[in-house]
Amino acid sequence: GRASRSAPLASKLLLLGTLSGGSLVAYSDSNKKEDQQQQKKKKKVVVLGTGWAGISFLKDLDISSYDVQVVSPQNYFAFTPLLPSVTCGTVEARSIVESVRNITKKKNGEIELWEADCVKIDPTNNKVHCQPVFKDDPEASQEFSLEYDYLIIAVGAQVNTFGTPGVLENCHFLKEVEDAQRIRRGVIDCFEKALLPGLTEEQRRTKLHFVIVGGGPTGVEFAAELHDFIEEDITKIYPSVKELVKITLIQSGDHILNSFDERISSFAEQKFLRDGIDVLMGMRVMSVSDKDISVKIKSSAEVVSLPHGLILWSTGVGTRPVISDLMEQVGQGGRRVLATNEWLQVKGCENVYAVGDCASIAQRKIMGDIANIFKAADVDNSGTLTEDELQDVVEDINVRYPQVELYLKSKHVRSIKDLLTDSEGNPKKEVDIKAFESALSGVDSQMKSLPATAQVAAQQGSYLAKCFNKMEHCKEHPEGPKRFRTGGHHQFRPFQYKHFGQFAPLGGDQAAAELPGDWVSAGRSTQWLWYSVYASKQVSWRTRALVVSDWTRRYIFGRDSSRI
Ligand code: FAD
Ligand code: MG
Image 1 (cartoon, rainbow, N blue to C red):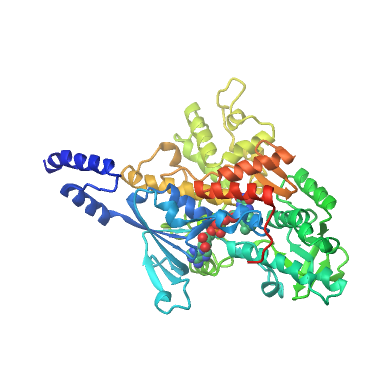
Image 2 (image 1 turned 30 degrees about the horizontal axis):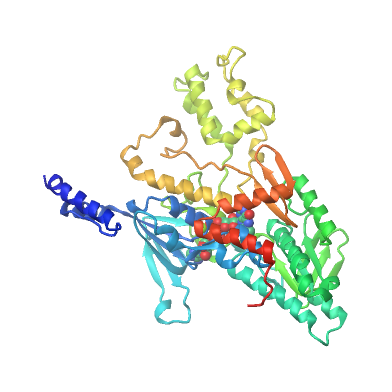
């Protein structure tokens, strides 16, 4: 009765609110009570990290049904693929970041954000311990702890020096926005130092020797940015130094960009050769000092020493201490990343999820599972499958292991069903799992873990949010759809990664791209594709506008080389 009586009033107030600018919120008594009950029932979700995985989770989560608390040492999200562009001022640092509070304010509900590092995860007591970032303010640096019903770990990875002496002290890294800003100043410093009176030519050359360790996407992109900066802007304002500058890229393997198609690797190598960027392959860095970097040539075991002005260390990623500590606690000690199941739950703790660079889905041996799928489908235990049972097998395999079908295609078998039916489409009299296994021999070894990219992190965050949005509903209907029941009674479809390809900007308005369907392209048109994709992927219209205007400014006025 009460609810219906107050409804007309509420709608009038709401109308008034809308007319007066929408700031007035109408609440009837009964609504308030319902809200309070909801508040009591709301589960506590704690999210660690506001990078690709954390933000895509928050963006897609229905935060009105959870009590959400976020812990991150940064109160912003950074668009990492544009970090290399920040190092030379092609885009400004503020253009690639968006405040977390801005991103979530549009949502129906509120989140709490604490600018702090999570220093310890305690899964036994469902607690996390945090240390605010303001270490020199005694009032604002008190440790605190948060309780959770669900924990989402999205803290990413950190740089990895592989224990090489001198790297931490003498190299730049490119992981955070501050790193990119430091590099920008560092590069300009090298030019200003080289111009000072009293230096020998040798000393000037050393100041202007830029060394990049690591031939992955980050190192290659930085080399390209730096080369463009020097060609397009620096030589105009420091004409006397052009002959003295040198860029060297050191790579331990036989090719740069070796996670890309080999056509792209060789395109990049040839472009760098034309640009005069020295690419040294098959080299291993032994140690670094403030003056020299010493490298071992793998083939001859000879060690050479190169004087340098600035070094960027961009090889591989390592584990954050808070993750190493958690892995020890849950019996995953010694691993590099947290192992999760296909629903992104950390193995050993059901209510803890891990997404992005700090996690990896443990690849189960497919073949063992497939035997179970056959067994589960063969309801009458006859050892042969009826047509319906066969349908179940095919569906189960396709849902849980989409890569099986891809693998069979690579072996010119059109589909799983083709393999298990005769020419008329009826199930073979005896569906022999051994035959199926032999057709699939090799599939296990072909299963690689997912790459540590923004693309994977964002898809995982958004997948998890969708699961969370449906979680309550699924608790009420635990039976779930039939096809997800095999192997572990889980209410959701397992996480599946969709690869949309990858880009490698190579400078001089040229980029290379690897797109789905074995499609490779390189050159100027690909650079335009890169511009449009990267503009469209921005988290907000504000950053999109800023990034596009930075690109335009660069075209018209060039990059700014003031050291601020
Ligand atoms: P991150 O995005 O690193 O986020 C981690 C978050 O956790 C941060 O907010 C951090 O502040 C926070 N955090 C750290 N420690 C703690 C703690 N103790 N407690 C709480 N919070 C913590 N990928 C692509 O797909 N395409 C590209 O073109 C591309 N280019 C890249 C270029 C560069 C220079 C770099 C460095 C990376 C690039 N990547 C690219 C990779 C991509 O950035 C990562 O894979 C992605 O950021 C991983 O997302 P994440 O959420 O796991 O971690
Ligand atoms: Mg994250």
